[in-house]
Amino acid sequence: MKAGRCKSGAFAAKKALTEGKARLILLDPGVSNETQKKWREGCAFLGIPLMPMEGLGLAIGKPDHMVAAITDDGFTAMLLSEREKESISKDEMIDRTE
Image (cartoon, rainbow, N blue to C red; front, side, top):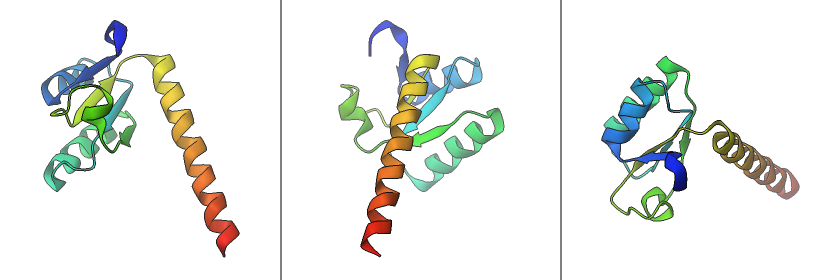
């Protein structure tokens, strides 16, 4: 992602989070349970949303990275809005099959 809106990798994401620059943390569900717990607790403590993203590393062009911090408010809003739309679509599909 251009213009520094995404800090990828555990070190860069943690730095963005602790410096108050992170607006959203993306975490690949393939990380260990302990890693998931660490990020979940850190985000909850700081009030930062955590969003699971399958294939995160491939999506950002860095296959070995499993965590990323989004630092742009507009980009964060767009990602959260898309997640909400996706969630509503899945709920509607479930309701129609019952």
